[in-house]
Image: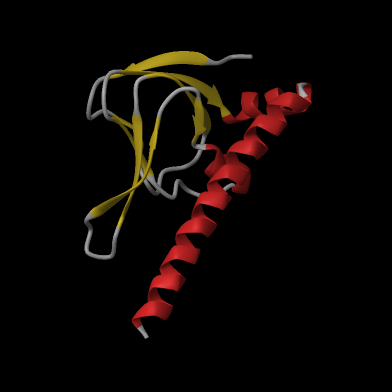
Length: 126
């Protein structure tokens, strides 16, 4: 696999919202924040990732531009796997595919929990 490791200083952007999704990232050390811009342009933090975590896979899997920005919060080391290599990596080992699916399932569960709490709060308000 032609993957490479890249270091990011605090504040460095790994990728920007709206960019072409051309790689998947594996956080090896440090902390990465995932943010998206609200309608007024203010960023909202969606996640703070710590090792070992995969990120950037969504845009690669659904072939859409990045839906968020990834930024190093502290000095971080990230393994970058280009899209063409990621596909091979998935095909070669079912455990790799399973790891990505577990990551996505966890994020869906988190999103569902947030929606459930928001709806409960709205019901209490009314």
